[in-house]
Each structure stands twice: as C-alpha cells, then as structure tokens.
Image (cartoon, rainbow, N blue to C red; front, side):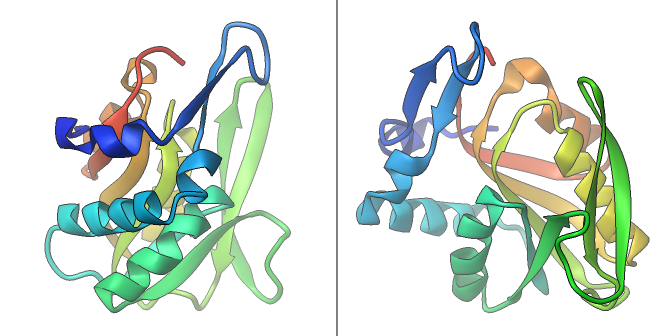
Length: 180
C-alpha cells in the first residue's frame, strides 16, 4: 500500500497527459531523479519498508536499476539485474509473459542467484504487474525466495500489486496514482 507520508515524493513525480497515447497519464520519475533530496528520501523510505534480511535486490530493466543499486548499498546486499531477454552475456534463464499484443521475456544470468537467497524485487512503477510477476517467477525458477517487492509508484486501478500479493509477494509502494 502507498503511504500518505510520502506526498513529498509524489509531488516530485511529473504527470504527462496523453503519453505514449491518448488517455494515458504517464507518471514521469525523471523529475524525482533530478532532485537529490527526493532521490535520497525515496531510497531511505524504500529501505524502511523492507521486512527481514535480504541477500539481493533485483532491479527490473531499466528504471528499476536506478533504485535497486542505491537500495542494495543501503541494505548491504548485491544487485541482481532482471533484463530484457538477449541483453545479458553468458548463460541465462528466461521467463515469458504476456503483453497487450504479444509476449516478451525477461532473463537473469543462470548463476546470479544462489538457491534459497532472499531476493527483494524493485521497480519504479507497478501497473498491471505483468513484468513484475514474470520476474518473480523467473527468480523463483532460479531457486530464490521472493516474498517482497517494492515500487516507487503504484497504479492500483490496474491491479498489479494485488496480483503479486495473490502470488505470495508482499508488494509495497511509496505512492499511488489513480487511473492508468
């Protein structure tokens, strides 16, 4: 659930109407990233939401990387990259997921995660949850224990965080916006 005390973070996120197509309200985190205090607050507050020990922070390609790396430093863990398929060198494992029209795949290095590792999934935004759910399945296929996922922004009307919760992942976000 989003926390009302994070209005200072919410206020640093710009909304761009009708991008990338009419009717979409794009939640642009670049304005948050440009603000050093806002970025620090975001990392600190994400860290405060983590429950228990974490071995790795998995960032989802590509904006999730921006939050995963500093969060991992704060938590004293490593960073695991969940990339679009075909972007990692070496042996990988992948997971396919449905898009509005077609499918896509996410991948990790086959040796990136020790079986039993406690992994926190992180991304900038959760909407329908398709990518996040695929990342959770992929990490679990590698033997990880994924019980938490953190996001800067939730679009609760699209149901992604609830879908993660239904799969046993405690999803949290710092702020939420209505609509899509």
